[in-house]
Length: 366
Image (cartoon, rainbow, N blue to C red; front, side, top):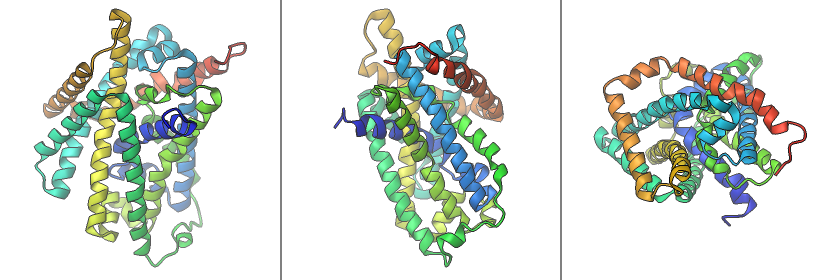
């Protein structure tokens, strides 16, 4: 099973990609509203198509470049892509990790307090415990836990979507009817997808078992398609209350609370909490992979499991501490600059020089 095509090419890459992306890209539903649903029923579908294709292209080039150069941690990957400028990505990603981890701890704590009445500090402590334990146990267990999380997500989404669609008098055709679709949505979709893939070099450990170019292509296409499925579910749900729902700060919570029984909403919140934790786990695993490679070059062996757990704990605590003194808020105010930095040090090089490296004539295809 662990070495089957289904596991290596389809399950692991899609589970890692969606698990890490979901907390930051889908949690509140506001992101889907801003970049997809605000353009109306058909405009939103067009936006999702652009998002899926952008995801797939960037993922394919990243997976294939990592495979060709055997570069499955971000330092060696960026060395292949950027040469002597590899450190530029490391600077940007360290800032991005601080933001991501601080947001993970803060959002998870607030989530359990708002919905379950659990003290924020206990929710944040729970995130810290999950992150330390999973990173201590290692990559294989992390990947398997992500598959379980994503499976649970789709089961809960299926149940909640059933209640959403059952609560409206409109058919799906009527819900998605749009006399004048807005095709200008491609700009927002492109920005959404490019920003969402800025952390991708941290996740290349999920591509370690891809053996051929066709497997890289299939894995990337599967990730792109699975990556927009939650957006599709949210978009259809939002259209039952469109356009008034565009003004809601938390559109996902609003529509699910209005249409679903309490137990279904609570299940969704539990899964959301787990996936927010997985965002931190997945990002930190990418950082640990980079430290392991450095240790391997210097000492001939990677860090121990205890070292993995301690590194994860230190990074989480440091990020939460920086968040508590306002540094993360300051950085978030410059989030556009961070997104632009990812574009400059990763996306543009990948879509130019990376394309050449992947397809240059005369290069053998291992």
